[in-house]
Amino acid sequence: MLWLAEPPLGHKLNKAKTHLWDDSMKDIDYTAPRTLAEAAALLNDKGDRARILAGGTDIIVQLREHRRDLDLLVDVKNIAEVNELTFDPARGLRIGAAVPCYRIYENKDIAKAYPGLIDAVSLVGGVQIQSRASVGGNLCNASPAADTTPMLIALEATCHIAGPQGPRQLPVETFCTAPGRTALERGELLVSIDLPAPKPHSGAHYLRFIPRNEMDIAVVGAGASVVLDDKKQKCLAARIGVGAVAPTPLLVPDAGAALVDGALSDALIDKAVQAARAAAKPISDMRGTAEYRKHLVGVLVKRAVQGAIHRAREK
Amino acid sequence: MTKKVHVQSTINGKATDFLCEPRQSLLEVLRDELRLTGSKEGCNNGNCGACNVMLDGRLVNSCLVLGVEVAGRKVETIEGLATPQGLHPLQQKFLEHASLQCGICTPGFIMAAKALMDKTPKPSEGEVRHWLAGNLCRCTGYDKIVRAVLDASGCPSPPA
Image (cartoon, rainbow over all chains, first blue to last red; front, side):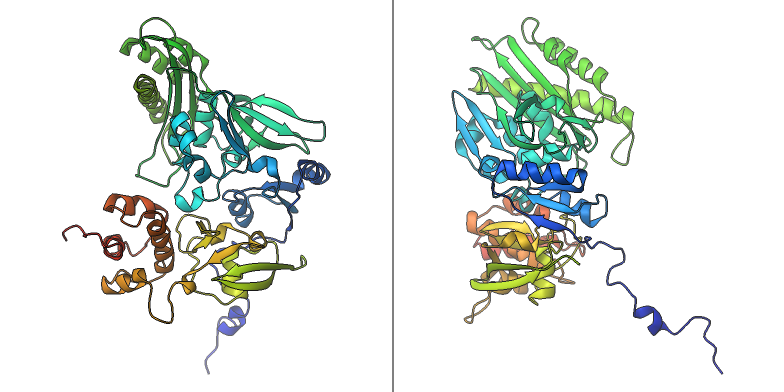
């Protein structure tokens, strides 16, 4: 007689999962309010049990992989203010928090005025991701390696926030406070990101390093924005933002200041490179060692500054 | 269990009502509720493109869209490509070039390639490769896929 050491296989198959791992999302509620006030009230009521759904390219994955546990998703895409995308050569650019990347790079006026921003939004995932993913979502997800945030920092963006205590504004470099954490208080949501109008003789450039050609998370990212004088030989103002070298994307004031010190030269750019390396406090992980990132941030800052100067001189 | 939501949408040109839970992705709705199993689940996290569909004329990963989000919107899937008169030119060229091995990535690649050709009817090889970066073929048969897309656009393929 044949004895089975284990119960018959059918016993196990009854409970067998169709997946090797559990990647189904837990029960959750969904609502799509039409006003900022309604959204803020819902977020205030639920606190950290609710979160915004815009493009969903981060939050849906986080819920499915049980990296976040929520009761409610608040879809903001029916709210007019977060879908606004307006450019005025005198007043600048307003990017509603839920505007997907493609709307930015497909707008010819915006693409001409903000080539550095276009560098960044074109690098977020592939075309499928760019159909949905928003700059506001990239910012609120608060990844240290977010591709659009260093460029927003270099371009001196301001965050417009709505909430139960009324609207407020924050410089973008203070918005992310730790990996996955932002300055948003209970009940608050990001409404738009405003960029000042490009100044005469200005240029910007964003670069990231990844070990393949497309579709990867930055090992390091660097955005530079410069304003040159009328003769385009001196830098009047410069801002450098770097990503994936600290718990949050960083503004490096010393790197910008180093460029505003006499005629532009390789030596001047090297000072900015040294300042960026000094500011970088990277970790070692699967994408690279801290030492490697420290080296890389200098290389990328140098090239981003050169690219920004080139664009400023081309205009 | 969360109450199911009644969603009215247009799928492949037909007004379609369905019930779904808010946690269900558009991909789950298509496959499990509507039995449109042409769209495949590869990675289920937005990396592989096997679930690609068009949503209001834009290419999206249907695993990263919730079913409830498509209320009032138009969805086109791989099932909508062929007509009673025959296959879509991309489907035909994928067959002629043997651009599939296991076939799981194929519907996604065809939807992505269609989205490219809608925008750029005569893409270069570089444009095809760049556009298809969000679609993964784990059999690694990329070259034949690129050749099929170029052929379907009436562009010469690079020499073998």
